[in-house]
Amino acid sequence: MSGDLKYPIGEFDRKFELSPTARAERMETIRDLPQKMRDAVKGLSDEQLDSEYRPGGWTVRQTVHHVADSHSNSLTRFKLALTEDEPPTIRPYYEDRWAELNSALPYGRSATPEEIASAVAFLASPRSGYTNGTILTIDGGPGA
Image (tube, rainbow, N blue to C red; front, side, top):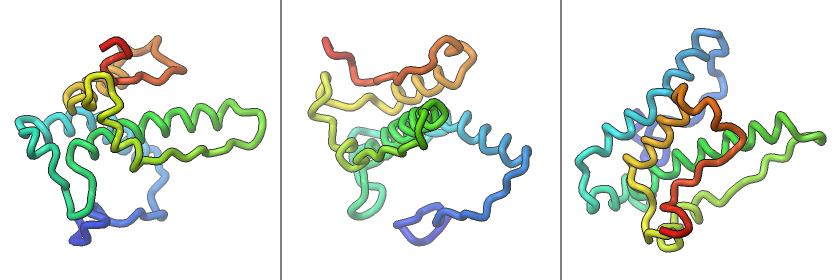
């Protein structure tokens, strides 16, 4: 951990290992993430979830949702890059705007961290074998 709140886990290091072992460790990190996030927020009150994790930063709730948004967008970007005829275009999204979407959602709130973690755990499980080529929207549904 870094003492710099802008980079709490340190700045990105471009000199990372590319071995099969390192790749397997990174895949395990991603696989374990939903449970670790579930454990990290378990028992937190709404007040705690809605407090900034650093001055001027996102709330804990926004950060949890950002991870799911970021991973979903990353998966879509990789699939587009693998299937486009032209050189792939990496289309950005406005992460800060996505973090403010709570009022536009059917329930007037984002999914709870547990709801997000459950969906991510499902997508990472063997039970999601036929779930491909789609984005799972966790927003309460349009009729909610």
